[in-house]
Image 1 (cartoon, rainbow, N blue to C red):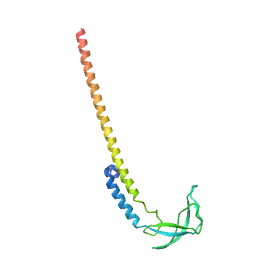
Image 2 (image 1 turned 120 degrees about the horizontal axis):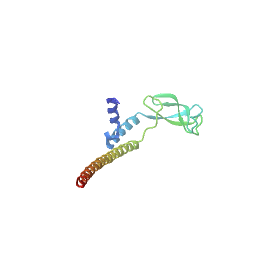
Image 3 (image 1 turned 90 degrees about the vertical axis):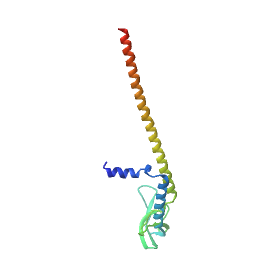
Image 4 (image 1 turned 45 degrees about the horizontal axis):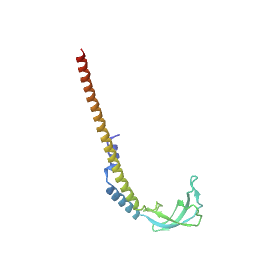
Length: 160
C-alpha cells in the first residue's frame, strides 16, 4: 500500500477521532445538507412499475416547485396509481433527492465511533497482555530448561 493510501486509511479509522468529534461533524453535515432540500407535491403522470421483482415501485412524476417545474422517475408507494399526489424532496439543483436525514443519525454515528474506539483499545490491551504472557512463558520455559541441564550435568558428574 503506498504511503498516501495508508494515511487516508488511517484517517478514516474511528479511533482517530472521538465520538464527540464524529457527532459534531456528522451533525454539521446533516444540517447543511438538509438546509438545501425542499419538499414539493408531485403528481404521478405514468403508471407505477415494479422494480426488480420487489415490492418497490417507481413512476414518472411532475411537480411545480420553488425552482420551477420538473419531471423525474421516483420511488412511489406500492398502492399508488396515475394521478395520485406524493411528496418529493428536491435538492439544491431542483432534482429529486433523498428525504432529509434525521439528527439521530449523528448521535448513532458518535456512539458508534466511541464504541469502536473502546473495542479497538480493549483488543489492543488483550493482545498486549497475551503477547507479554507468551513472552514470559517462553522465558520461564527457557529458564527451566537451563536448570534441568545443570541438574542433569551434576547427576552425570556425580555418577562417574
